[in-house]
Image (cartoon, rainbow, N blue to C red; front, side):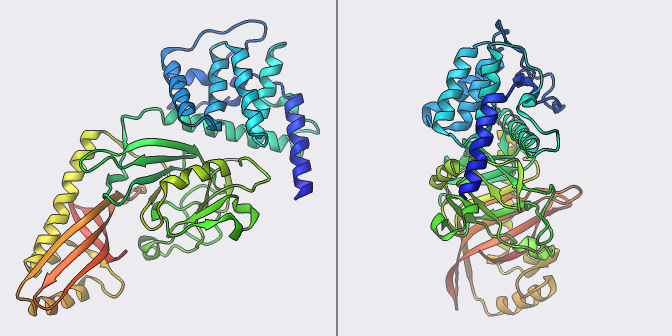
Length: 451
């Protein structure tokens, strides 16, 4: 551990003293969806040595205002400070950019990327520099130092790309259809953007509100997880199952961990294997890690992991992991809510009325539960209905989450609720979970069981 800290300290000193780069060279390959947009101008920073560049355009001013609001809310938002420094540099205020980065590195001395960019800004006061991190490298492109710089470049691109992608607060993640009164917050992961979004439940009939977002580290290999040890982060709808404090964990997991229920019911039906998918912190000898560096977990800095603790409730908080988040308008969100609530009501009413034909019509042909397929489920319900003179069924605390869709897959949703059941010979409540699939325009129950 001491040896590792010495290596990191030497690397930081080297980066601080030797970096020489135009900040815009962080992002030499621009994504097509950003090229030409106003915010993409941040990706094209001009060198300001010996002079000033053009001021920020109106869209970048909006981004700067948003960063300032984040810092007002949390002065220790280190990523906001980093991005603010880059924006100030973009606007030609080199002195303010350096001041911002100096304050940041004092607060977060292990934030290697901040040290590297600060070194670039200090050098930019005296001379033009052309390639991010070039002069910080000795020993050739295959040296350990060169590889470290390359990882920092990847982190910088992921942070900026992810943050700029999150500036439009008008759209709503399609994943968050309905949140019950028992669910205060939901976590939405965008693997493509290396971003974790925190959404707050603002009440029935209203779209959730974005309240926070973070850079995250994901599995070393891209794509959905299917096999144990494939080093991929899974895609799906999950729920936090417990909290593990740092004193019960190896140093790798940093300040703690929130395990999630991978593999869930849907994963197991698809024969997915593996376990131990957690949200957790970073080894305390480090500040952050490259964007693809975990064994499949979702990793935050320790500072930010501690921040998300206020949003997470064990057993309640959903974590929806997407390859790419699907965004919808408030109107589309409302229409989807009405459609899903109508499907659940049709299912509830046909069950309550003991209309076996109508009831089974709500189930997909490929339905499964813990003990049944659709045929055996129908046989079981036929026997149950024969002994009922009446049934009353009510649903409460309904949450509905859209499953991340894969190419050519049919839409799937996950509904959690409390089921209140009364009949002539049985009364009881159950925390139930349904998976529903949309087939030929209608929602059909794919899975039914306890939460």
